[in-house]
Length: 173
Image (cartoon, rainbow, N blue to C red; front, side, top):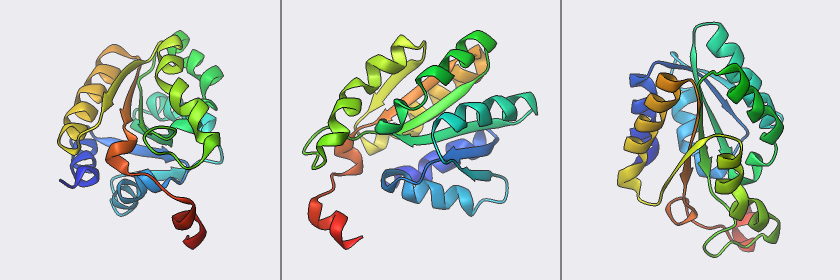
C-alpha cells in the first residue's frame, strides 16, 4: 500500500492548504506529493517549533494546515504546544518515529521513546499506526478531531512502517 499517496488524498479531502515540515526521509514521498500539489503551500521549517506558529497563522487566515516531523522534532515543540491548548486552534502533526525497532542512531532513542508521553502531557490526542493500511484512516480521524475540537492531534507512524536506517545507508546518502 502506498500510504503517502493515501495520506495526500486525505489532506486534499480536508482542504489542507499549508504543510509545514523539516526535511525527513520518512516523510519524503508525502512531502514530494504535497510540493507537487498546487493547492498546498509547503513551508520548510528551520525548526519544528516554527510549525506551531505556522499552524496558528494558517488558522487565523482561514486555512487548514498539517505539520510533518520526526519524533526527535517533538522535543522542539513542547513549549509551543502550550499555545494550542490556551488559544484553542487545530493542530495536526504527523510524526515518523525513530528510536524504535532496530534504530542505528542512539541519539534518536530518548525522544523516540518519550514522544507519545510528551505529546499527551502537553494535551495532544495521540494515535499510533504500524500498518500502512491504517495510516490514511487515522490521519483522517485526527484531522476531524483537531478541526472539530480545536485541539492538537498527533499520528505516530511507527518505525516498522517507515523502515530503519543503517550506518551504511547514512554514509551513502
